[in-house]
Image 1: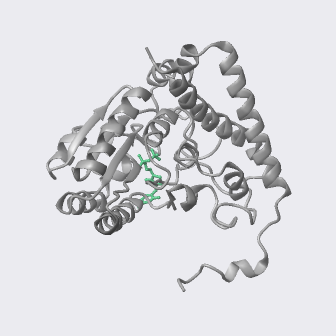
Image 2: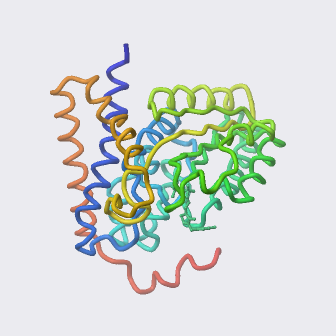
Length: 321
Ligand SMILES: Cc1ncc(C[n+]2csc(CCOP(=O)(O)OP(=O)(O)O)c2C)c(N)n1
C-alpha cells in the first residue's frame, strides 16, 4: 500500500517533465527554442526518484540531458523556458540554452555538453561540502547524474577513486539507457558488469533494473542517509531506463534502424507515469494535469514576453572576475 500523497507528488513531477518536453517537441519547428534539445521522455522516473529525497540545498549535477533533473529538483520553470527561448530572464541569462541549465538557489549545478566532465566537478563540490560540514556540523550531499556513455571516460574512474579515498558525500547515479547516440552497449562494453567495476574502488553499489520509481527513491533515501549521518563515503547506483525519442531533437527515430523496437515496446509498457496514474483516483489525476497545463502555459507566456539579452551581455561572464 503506497502513501497517496507521495504517489501524487511523484506523479505530478514525472508528468510535468514529460508534458513540458512534449510541448517543446511541438513548438520546436517554430524556432522559438534556440538550442538543441536532448529529451528524457521515458526516463523521468530516475530524475524524480533521485531528487525527491534531497533537501533544497543538496546539489544535483546533470549532463546536457538535464531538463528532467532540473524540474525534479525544483528548478524554476519560467526561467527554464526563458533559457530555452534564449531570453534574458533565463536561468543562465539566455546565453546557455537547454544543455546548460543551472539554478543554484535550488541546488542545481550547471551542466555541460562534454560527456563525463560534470563528474569531477560534482566530486569537487562534494569535497567542498565535506570541508563545510567540518565547520558547520551539517552534511549536505551531492548527486552526480550521467549516462552509461560517460562511464567510458577516464575522469569517471578518477572521480570514483578520489571520492572513495576521501570518503566524500557523493552519490554517483548512472542512467543506463543502453544507448550512446546510436551505439548500443553491446558494441561498447566487453562486459556489462558496471557495478562490479565500480565496487573495486571500495564503493557500495546498487543496481535497479526495472525503472521502478519506488525502488529508485528508496535506494537513494538510504544512500543519502548513510552519507549524511554515518559518513559512509560515496555510493553508486546503476538505474536501467530507456530513451523513447531521438538522441537530440524532438522526433522519434524509430525508422533509423539502430534500436530494437521490441525492447522499446517493453519499456513503454513499464511506463512509470501510467503506472502511478493507476494508483490515483481519476479526479486527482485530472486536478494534477490541470495544474501542469497552467504551469507550462505560464512558463511559455513568461518566455515569450521576456526580452532578449542586451548586446553588452556578450562581454559578461567570459572570464572569471
Ligand atoms: C567528451 C565527449 N565525447 C563525445 C561527445 C559526443 N557525444 C555527445 S552525447 C554522446 C553520448 C553519451 O551517451 P550517454 O553518456 O550514455 O548519455 P545519454 O545521451 O544516453 O543520456 C556522445 C558520444 C561529447 N559531447 N563529449
